[in-house]
Length: 60
Image (cartoon, rainbow, N blue to C red; front, side):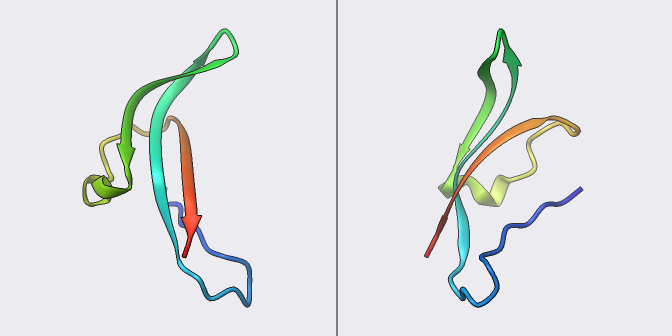
């Protein structure tokens, strides 16, 4: 399943990601297994699916 991020209707800025992590929760804390920053978006399909992901995005 491919997810995409968009701004609110009428907001014409673009969205990109700062950081993507795959991982799990252990004892209520996030434990990452793999991390990518925004410069690595060309190699964006490195994660096993399904899974748990934390994604930080920004608007510009």
